Image (spheres, rainbow, N blue to C red):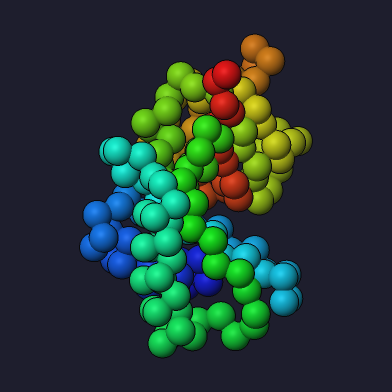
Length: 150
């Protein structure tokens, strides 16, 4: 089980028990400058008090379980306009929107894509970038987010 999976399994129940949608986490390991970022959402939006509430719960769990041995900064955030996409359900929700996707491995000679998410077929994402269609396996996605439609 990866560190992100372990942390997700540990922290998801706490956020959901407080009434928030747990979108996912990012763990950026950089020695004493590491960051653990938790993304939450709610149908009424997210404010600073919501983030503080989840941060308080998560801090307690992390202090007891101690899954990260080095120093890190805990951040709790709303998804914002450039909403991160963590699950297939997130991708399905935003078919027809412009997304940025970075892959672990190259797909047709590239690792970065910015274009319309035209479909989700099983575990495959269909992206249209510069009038060219690309199929990206969900398991190859390293990071993905919506492109703000301003």
